[in-house]
Amino acid sequence: MQSESGPHKNFGQPVVRASATFDEADEHPLTPAQAARRFDVPEYLLRKACAEGTLQHLRVVNSLWLAPAAVEQFARSWRATKRRRS
Image (cartoon, rainbow, N blue to C red; front, side, top):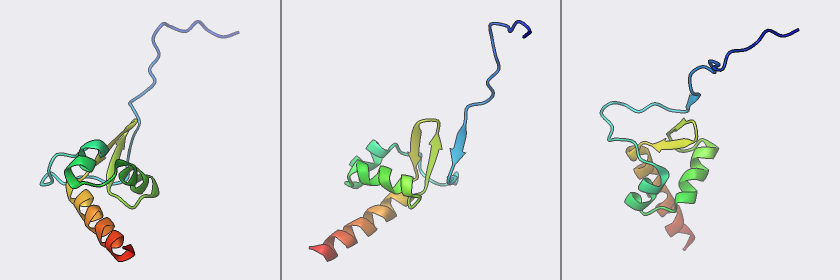
């Protein structure tokens, strides 16, 4: 027989999985939408690069936070690849 449970349960701290950390010297992290507008890169490419582990990011629950310096480097690489294909 199970004991009665209280109305509140402690489910612990929210899950935070970091594939990278940001230095304090970095600018404030950006969302994929903000980064896409700022660096003129399609948002889906940023999300895909995060999923593949090729772009420095933090995942906090369902949010992605991108380091501006990493996005800038990704954008330069993407543009160089795009030019070679043209």
